[in-house]
Amino acid sequence: MAEEPAAEVVEIPEIEEEETRENLKSEFPLGRIKKIMKIDPEINKINSEALHLVSLSTDLFLQFLTEKSAEAVLEKKRKTIKLEHLRIAAKRHQPTADFLLDSLPMPSSTESNRSGAAAATQKKRSESAVEKPLPVGTRRIDDFFKKSAIQES
Image (cartoon, rainbow, N blue to C red; front, side, top):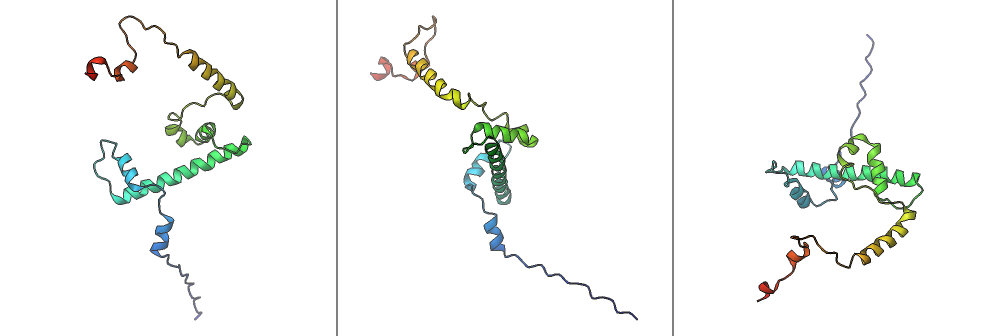
């Protein structure tokens, strides 16, 4: 009779539980995440495991978004991640675009126009310091927060 070859035994090294926990530690405070989750009126209680998973998911999502934004920065030959780079990263990944793109504000004018736009805005603000007459029967919102002579007595 022919001898059967011995089955090869592969030993899998056991990973210590403490080492795994260190790798799965969230960067966000769990209390803050729990408060944000409880904003939803349908959520009454939050399991600690679910809270931990949401926290880790948030870490992974932000890491992903940062990496994709960094790619956009390198393509544009810039050094700083700005809103426009976040928008580019979100547009390139459809699932992210579906929920995040509507929440991101539209970028303002380009870098070259910013200095001119800032000066124009400052000029408009100084000109608008002169109060314009209000329509009859209306008052400024600031008046609501000012103390009147009746309240001071």
